[in-house]
Length: 105
Image (cartoon, rainbow, N blue to C red; front, side, top):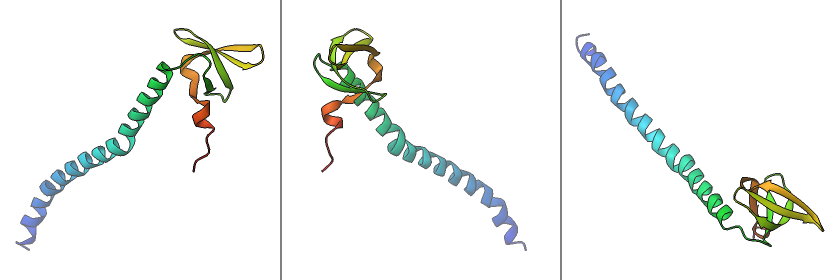
């Protein structure tokens, strides 16, 4: 009985440090598998939106395919059919149509 009592009293101190190590490890894993890839993707999309050009085929977030006819500061004019133009927010442009329609190998 005398040997068990000191071991039980020392256990919470070890578990507390182990708990902190596990929490830090979980945060590091979440950062590398969730947060970092999302940040890279957001930067990639931002760079794509900055590099938009007139007569480029794009797809909007709503799935509308069109050709850029005019680029303003915050908006883009898309031609979706002959003489049918719509103005959309630049942030709603989702992808380059040529890259989005390619079949994976």
